[in-house]
Image 1 (cartoon, rainbow, N blue to C red):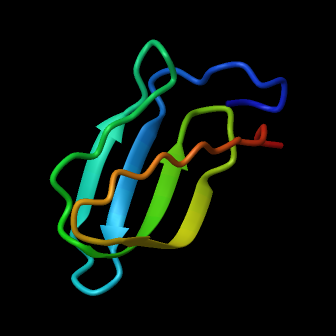
Image 2 (cartoon, helix red, strand yellow; image 1 turned 30 degrees about the vertical axis):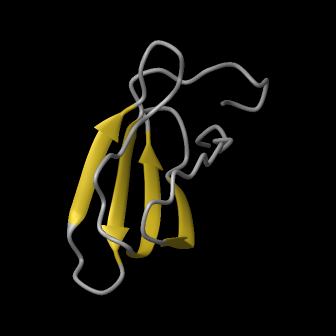
Length: 79
């Protein structure tokens, strides 16, 4: 979401493996949701980018076998 809690559509979402640096990417849909399926268990850094907003980085996201995580994030406007 943005600072007014509105959905952000077409934001680029990436999960980057801390151990291998492999990137898994998706875009937010019309509901502001993203789905990164079939990621191997590991520690990841999430990066979310959208024009007009500051790049958001969430480090230390740990994914275990059969985890289904929901991570809601709020982006701030770029200066």
